[in-house]
Length: 320
Length: 221
Image 1 (cartoon, one colour):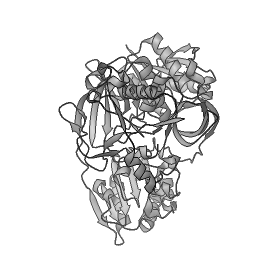
Image 2 (tube, chains in turn cyan, orange):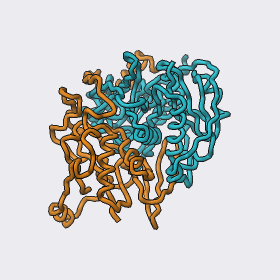
Image 3 (tube, chains in turn orange, blue):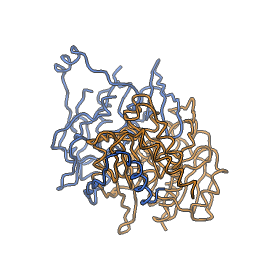
Image 4 (tube, helix red, strand yellow):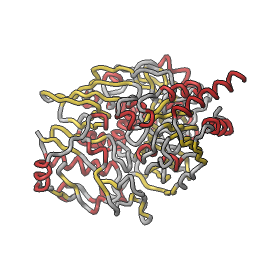
């Protein structure tokens, strides 16, 4: 069976959900071979085995956290040389794409970015992307070298599959440029306790219509255990952090339910959420473009409607 | 010091973007504009028919050769992504080809004495990083507001010479770029049916109840 390399995304050994998703995807394509770089393997070991890794290549040298991007490219190139994989899967994060980009040029291998799915079609890898704000779906394949594919978070559902991976400890030889970008400081962004937007099954978003008061949105998100998003207008006004911005210049999400409150639905926002399974909108303006893509919409005041919805949910829970 | 800014001319995202049926490339025949994210990140144009259908690696090759030909480039600034393909990979590819450091997703940037320092948002953390120039820096829309040009600036821009180089000027072989030499190939393009407009109700006291019923019937509650 062909080796499928999976670059594991983690923070000190705590695996990001995308790592589990990519391992699950790799299982459908060949032999998932995880590449774990940086300190913390002890914490990650059992989870990697729990999601079907057939082999793990581990390198815990400090360079992977002290310098940006290139050390990981060096390691991937080295593991690829010894495993001759059929594909390399990398998470579609900002760093993941930089790694994939450099690896592609260095190896002379084709790259497909932001794939939603990867499948085998006549023994050839085919990746699917959603482009132009979700209006077109494109299937592509790599024609030169080993396919490198970056996969969008949340596109694949992670499924556990117990395995006993063969462990290989490696010692990456770093290239001249590996230490060119030095990390002086790293501060984790404040964790809100709410699900990450890339992983949330439900997202409640607020826009200009909130006037800066996100409390009804947060209260609803609390009862639904949902993530909280914000439109660009809300972020630019300083009402919510950019890390929660959804849209063309923010995050693209595809939850099961997206509830847009006080968001007009300009195309730049729609580009970030219009592939959500179910879209609901609440807005005072009956002409708001968000209603064009909503499965259900209420023309009205979010400050009246959203709290009533929150109450109704809480009552339902209370009465069982 | 020469600062190179990479920009891309893209189809208008507010219009109907589509593909050319004949070769599955992005249809660039309609009105286009400067990619919105490049407003945040201009002078050398690369123009050559052989570039049609080039993928990201080929694009990065043409850009890298241009920067080499310019010589003396200390800083290469790009936006975070184009608004058409939005791959975000060309800047890192250019850096790899030129053997330069690349700092991406930059929200704050400064440089002094040949050293660049930048703050970048990556996933769950914010990093402060440093690299020696020359370097490639990709800025996000969080890096600042683009200034409107002054009248004097606009008049000077009108008079400014835009040099155009073709592949031969850059020493790039036509078989290194273009559609037929791309490292990826489009297999199929499917236009997604537009989302059908659902039920829209106007709240006159019962809006929340109707919304609750909708969410319940869809098993969200």
